[in-house]
Amino acid sequence: MKVRVAINGFGTIGKRVADAVARQPDMELVGVTKTRPSFEARRAREKGYPLYVAGAGDPSEFESAGLPVAGTGADLFARVDVVIDASPDKVGRTNRALYEAAGVRAIFQGGEKAEIADASFNALGNYAACRGKRFLRVVSCNTTGLARAAAVLGPAWGIDHWEATLVRRGADPAESKKGPINGILPTFQLPSHHGPDVRTIFPDLSIATTALVVPTTLMHVHVNHVRLRREPTDLPSVLEAFRASPRFHLFAPWEHADGTPQVMEYARDRGIGFNDMMENVLWESGVRLDGRNLDFFQAIHQESIVVPENVDAVRAMFDLAPDGPTSIAITDRALGLTPAR
Image (cartoon, rainbow, N blue to C red; front, side, top):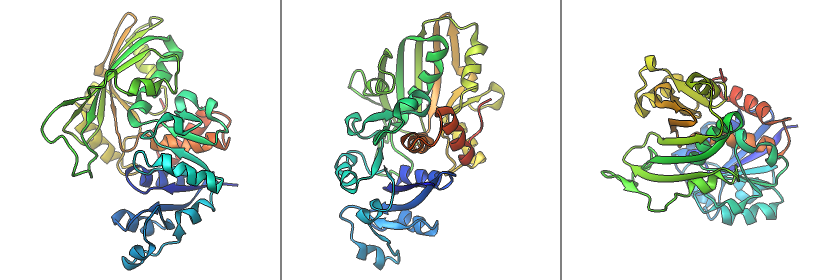
């Protein structure tokens, strides 16, 4: 029997997760919600996804726009096993009461506080610890990227301490009212919230993060300085550890991927999902090893990196796979992601 899934919020993340769920062999996408008519609501109908009205939305507005709806959010929640909440930041904490009233499980996004769920989730980091949970929270895009890297480095060599500077995009491509347009904005929360958020996955990890926002829409970039506990044999062994892990993509020097524009051009050429890059991106030329000190850049596509994590969270919640690697393999095969080499 397939797990019946609803997506509450069909925006940047929700529409991607909906497509991902629809491709899984052990899940059924029952419906998606929008609060008002939009081109995304129209696309949901064009894709054949039953459309429901969320929150205080007015069904008559959808009908007037030629977008028939199947009911309200409450109607949808009564028909599913789990809701993936992809509503705007801070709305999930209000929605949790709706899910509890409906007796349905739920998965929240990283814009919510960790306390909203029984556990924070990262497929490579703590899949086993999240099995059977009623409420899970998939951590944010930046935290997902850091947690994935920690899941590779920690078991291999141990981590004494991690310092990371996050160069964050100013807005997603469709967010025309956000910025900065011309400026570099330091985040004056020191350390930034990302380090504590990583510790919701790895409680004992010593990590400090800082962040700043720059005028780009393409990706985030992390500048990482990691003091390992044990010295790797050599740099190739570190590169191979990343390369052998799922959800990492390494660019060789000969590929001339000089930065995030070329990475996203590669993603467009590859044509997965919305021309997304769901993996952590590393450049072989951007990794340096000096004894136990490892420095590396990684790029994070903020619109899509959490998409496969949401799928794996469903599988962990309902114990659909024996372990994390099995779930990751099922998810990635369905999404067309490149297998680990």
